[in-house]
Length: 112
Image (cartoon, rainbow, N blue to C red; front, side):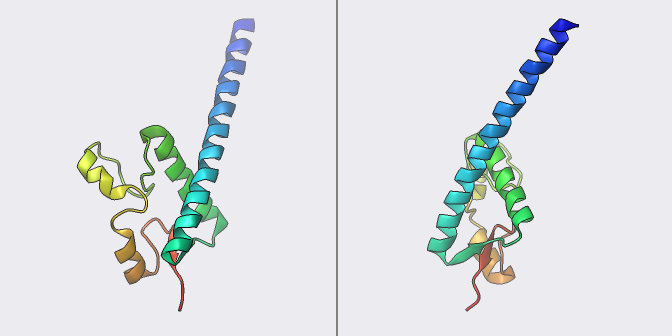
């Protein structure tokens, strides 16, 4: 029984470390996307919950795959195809122009 408690504590410590790593990556993603949005003339999703969800997906992809893949698109493993979905993806400008936001709803068009 003692072994299980020690093991459980190790699992909890590992999960806490993973959560801290994810939180740190999310902060980095926020800083990077906010800077990009400002430079490109966009703004980030004003819905804090949705913004957090998208940033968490991007941070998870960055930690898992080493690149800032859009969380709303599927990483295929085909390097040439997957390059298209590294944020900001090749589709985002057309999507923002047409729909007012990118597919992930991360970047939004500023009203004139």
